[in-house]
Length: 268
Image (cartoon, rainbow, N blue to C red; front, side, top):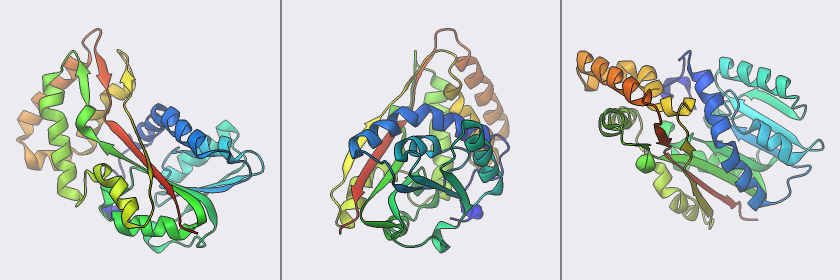
């Protein structure tokens, strides 16, 4: 993973967005770990952990006798993750700057490897999975999570966001990723690696005023340069204003995109 291929790198708001995102999806991650079973004493890896990732979940799962390694290529992300781990008292967490495609981590040295939202942005899913499988021990578990936007809606409908902004953001991602909807083929990705996976999907309902409802607008800000290549600047500004009005409507609920989770064990 290189900084030049991650379209949101360098955005000042990205640290806050990633921590909020991690908190929203922690219950879904906890459910997967519960299905996998007892992790006490395990050594685990969170690839591209960003500002928080699964660090807290994995720290709890492996317990005081286990260890968690979080990696990222961005120093600011790792600094934020370090602050988070210190604040939470996660004494079994270590953070390492590491490039997935030129990793210095030892092969077969982890009992579990997790990666969330790493496949679509980079568009190298087969290569990434092959690396995750090299890093996990035989019989160990790889967990992948990615996004399907099909459920991303507001209640009542918010036409500016649903019909114009979300498709525009999706179009922007399609210009920088060769595989933007990889979530839809996660099971086949595992099967091509001779692994029969377990699969789960989660959608969160966001109550009025929930900050994660603003995700389309956060993406619009972060992707501003790309979006202005796809649509007239004045039109984009008007769309953002209308989206702000829709989100501010009293009683407006949101439905998130679908989080697709797939996991399986490296053949022994």
